[in-house]
Length: 342
Picture 1 (spheres, rainbow, N blue to C red):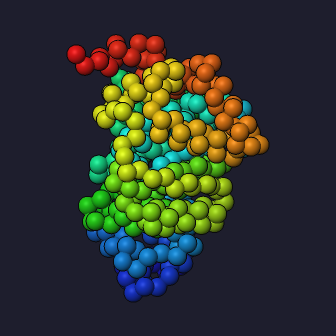
Picture 2: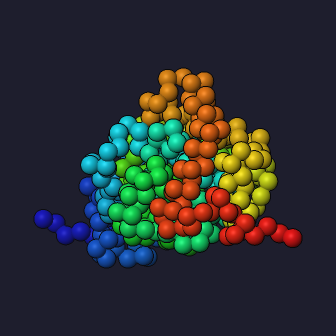
């Protein structure tokens, strides 16, 4: 067997060649084994940034990153595999609220949602930033804790962990310090590797654009959506990716604790800012249809409205928080943990 030389892979991509699945998998394996240095990761990501990657190359990178750690096994959980659906977003100011509302809402409708999210990029927020503000909540739990939280509550929102797609974390760190974060193939592989590691059977993802989003123009968002859908298809993951305009802040609050109060208020039947409400209901409908729990958009909307009105969604939110180690009474007593401003 020939020896593995990371520089050969880097050189090929630097020269604009298409890499084989085997070369990409071996390079990612080398990240985990220590055969590939941070400098070599940086050279590789810059070569990908400058020369692009084909959908097949991106799919190979996605699957190699997924295989770099554990993949959540849902067998024996009692969950219907068809209902294990992930929700994701490319981010936007205030948009992280949407996930914290959608996850318990669709869980109350019968969906199981294991969501591996991330921190915000630049001025955009991230779901993990909100979850980290919950006292006691584990944002990087063991795979067993994550799995059990989804089984117990129907949803769990966590950040990247050392067990799930660890190569993504190593590559992302280097992308962040080498100005290659914006590469569409690398964004695609980063997102989808974590979704596949979570064992999801489908993905609904809003691709946002505008002054409040990570992607500034419709064209950028469209290019990313097309990349995600093409690679998800090659990886065997059903996916829909609505493109969402975000030139304004979502919701009425900025700051983790204030946004958590807004989430609890929404789920409690309090104030529901119109743009957040519209996006929450549209995404929830897509998820319920993908999971086979509704046949039409109207049927899905009716189901989501019923679970929001009867308190089931708020109950699922509280169960999710408790399952991840947070307070047992956060939903009932938010003032205790997030005192209102005076």
